[in-house]
Image 1 (cartoon, rainbow, N blue to C red):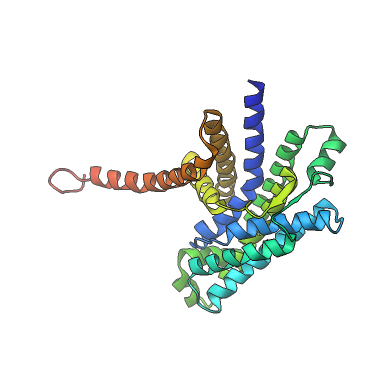
Image 2 (tube, rainbow, N blue to C red):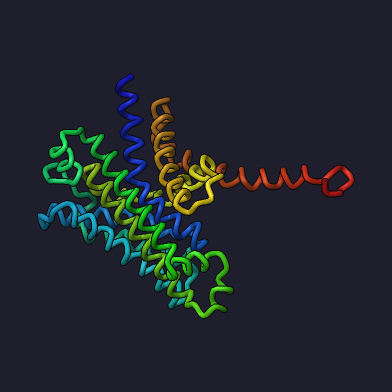
Length: 305
């Protein structure tokens, strides 16, 4: 039983660390109304840069995290430039950047993976200083980074430029009519989004003690699933900070569900299918519920009740 509880504890910790990635996806998917596929590549890029800086350049693990975030921001900026300057559709721009990042990540590492088994990480340092276990350290550090990220995003999107980014996703034509350059707001939104994704990748890299070329595969699906799960669980929350928190909670719940089904004997190779089914169902249920409510609002004669 203790093994199962430990597995669930680790799943929640990982979910919170991935929660920063989910916040990044939330910015593009919910605020900008863009399905940014850069995420799979920028998540791995953040982890790769972090690992290489620690292993090859003996950098302290904390600044290595923020270099991973900076790398993610650069990848988001590339997608933004492809989209707003060269007018490539957002989804295609994300695909192009994601594909190119595969080669970039291999160049950064020089091989397919970089282990961090004999190096310092923020989790190891925190564990030694507080006397807590590595699992508890991951939980605490994940919560601290997630809370800080939510607080900063809540403040930023309440500023004039942050509000302009949110308005761009709601009604781009109206924002243009107000004299705001929507190309800049999209570029900035994509940059911030992938910065969070890169930071999440760096944290996960230090947590699992290795960076791998495939570590970001399916990240966009995880992000979308977590957002939808959070909205289903906490859909009544209308406060922006609450919505951001719901995204992180959704990430923790997603990883908890994944750990549960693995404990029940699901083949790990089926997890991608399982994730896709969760996203599909979660996206379909609100639409079908709305159609059902609309149908029930009319009587058999076609008149509104």
